[in-house]
Image (tube, rainbow, N blue to C red; front, side):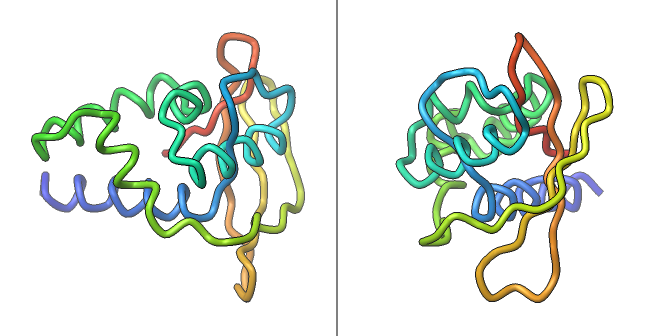
Length: 130
């Protein structure tokens, strides 16, 4: 069971990272901006920016996952950043409900839309991998 949860978390992280958006350590004023910044940071393998754009809850889960694989969180984030699409995914509907939000996105050539989750922390929007 633990292996399934670990595998599911890793797959989720890889999918979101390869399809999402980021940048350089500033606070995102909207979920769409957070998505774009996340994509850029992932593309550059900018660990500091990635950490600033991922929710505390998700970072804790990632750190646990990294430790279970005998890796440091920074190394885990760099490894998970592989396979970033060459172009920014298309973004669609953004829905904000208090301090939580979702954003639809679609990779180039994809037939269906995916949904990214966000949470507002420390005055900015952050990716929240559920």
